[in-house]
Length: 121
Image (cartoon, rainbow, N blue to C red; front, side, top):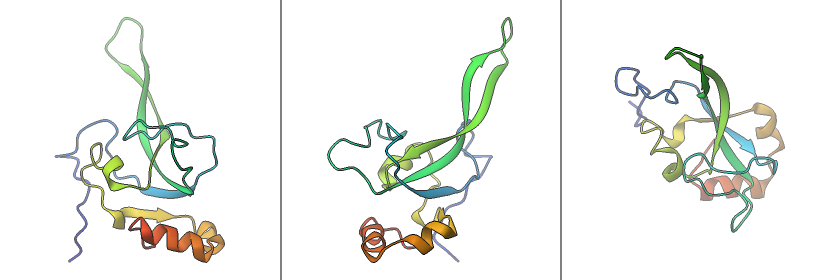
């Protein structure tokens, strides 16, 4: 049996909590803030990678009702469980997936960097 917790809709009921995968992505410089710690990505050291997660985003309310206007969009986190787990307590490093194309393009130093973060793909 693996040590990874799983998303359980009976327990994890916040709008942004879901069973969507946590996706490792190369940092492209356009993303400004980590959704977890609220720090900018370019603070001390620009990260090589970020974790994206598709979550429900509330962008308004239907006029005259309590109905919310929502859509799913990607939110981004540092490659650090401490940034992700406050919003997603079921998150475990083994939940991270990546695009096969990114895996093929990873250099040896990129792989070592991910290992230093505790991410083994």
